[in-house]
Image (cartoon, rainbow, N blue to C red; front, top):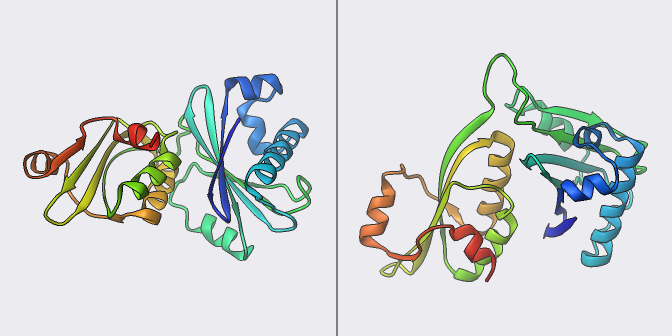
Length: 226
């Protein structure tokens, strides 16, 4: 079980197959709040408290579950200052397959769980999309911080360039078959440190020709290690 602090109100936890198997928990149980799932969640919150001082107390929590692979899942846990924001968030969700559950008894607080399963379909629509991201950053340190937070997602290709004339960095990311929920989380995290700029994938040729190539491939993983 790997837990990381995103900010003062948000943490993420990656659970792999061994984490679930050792507790005899199925992924589906995380959404329905079984006794085993609640015990696992309490362990997660206890570890988050010990490592990062992340305390939920009586604050409502929102939990977003993002499948990373057949053997792992990522939970994004967010403290919600205004409980009305939860209902507003899910009312405006464009994903027809998103399911939400309230478990007030789970941890003596209102908890919303959002699951986004790559196997679910609604009205015949495929919830998986292809994305091309381009974000600019002012420093390598910011890139290192943000890539450490999104490194658990599966990207098809990622590259890092530098425009020496302007002194800014360009991080480009290609993501194939990624859920819309994962897309929102990734873009939201990237936007905390960098600025989104709109380009088509053909811009990669321009970047390679006019900018310095800092990392040719797998930039997210490489930069996350710095």
